Amino acid sequence: MQIQVLTFRTCDVPAGRLDRYGAIVELAVEEFPGAVSARYIVGEDKHIAGGIIIWEDEQSLATFRHSEFYARLMLNPWLEDGNDRDFELDRGAAGTFANIVALPVAA
Image (cartoon, rainbow, N blue to C red):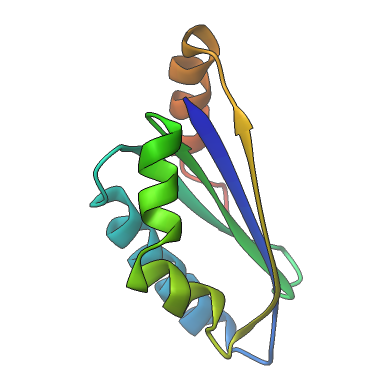
């Protein structure tokens, strides 16, 4: 399993719009084949946003990275300085991590 961590600096986006955009991104990413869990996170100061996505395998992650959706996400004018990293996650830790990532963030 692969864990992907995306981070961005946000650009003068009203907080409510950024939160709604994050919810849409989560739903769209979870529709990709091989996506196990997706969580979009907005920093408390609303100047940093990002996502944590768990993928079944490297091929699923590669397919996502080559998608039109990914290209639009990385080129979104609301988001700057995009950073995309991934790490291998062993299957034993993956289930626990997916449960933690899926928990709602306290307001």
